[in-house]
Amino acid sequence: MFNTHFKFLSKFLALSLLIVLAACSHAPAKHAANITDLSSANLPAVAAEFVTTRAGEAHEHEEHQALPAEVSWRFWRDSRQITIERPQLGVGELWQRDGQELIHRKLYHQDRRAIEFQAGDLRMLDITPSWQKLALLLDSQLLEKLTAEEIEWTDGIPTREYQGKVADTEWHVVMRLDLALPALIERQQGEFSERTELLQAYSLNAAPWQPTPIDGYDVIDFADLGDKESDPFVIKVQAQMGHEHHH
Image (tube, rainbow, N blue to C red; front, top):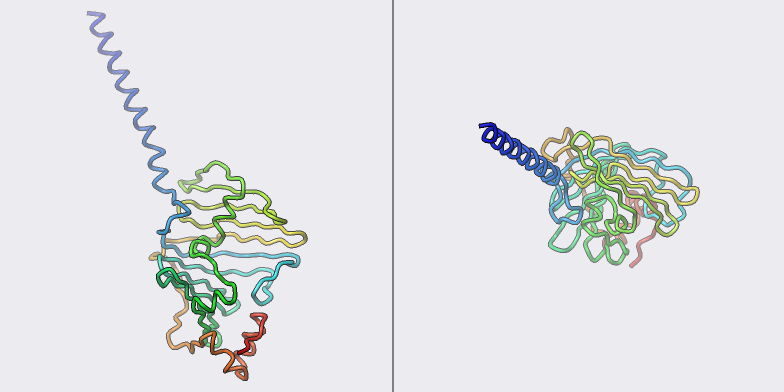
């Protein structure tokens, strides 16, 4: 009788242990479901707000007007369109996918005007970011050159830290893997440093703010800027872009 009870108890404990182990084995799968492949063509549709702070002077050529030491900006991403706005500067950017090609608009909200760059214009200007680079807000090839730490979980949010030096720039990046967005990008190049931090993020359909409507904006093709060289707006924009457009 004792042996019968003992065998029953042993089987019961063994079965209980199997159930516990099975439950544990499914826990990582639940986590894995929240992790986005950063190389995926279908990244989550999101809206986010960032703040970028800078100190020192950048040595590399950068095609933009001089920025304040601290800039807050917003970002919207879906499968075919990316919008970036810097509300305090009254400017924005729009990128759209047209098949394999990119179309870009620089938005000047205070002037209610925009400049549109077709794919050929971007190639001529040597502005050829990949869609993935625009969508991730940094180059995935850069991440491959940095040392990646193990995935960490905080309140159900998976993050991965990347660090290292590429060329003469020190990088420290923290990616939110659920949204495929950087939570932190820090770079140091000589005396110049830049820090971009994620302030808040939402699924796109739950965002508390939307891009500024651009219906009714006067859109100028980049190729036509040369015909409008006396336009004060065009003069201002060309100065900001750091080059003159000639026929």
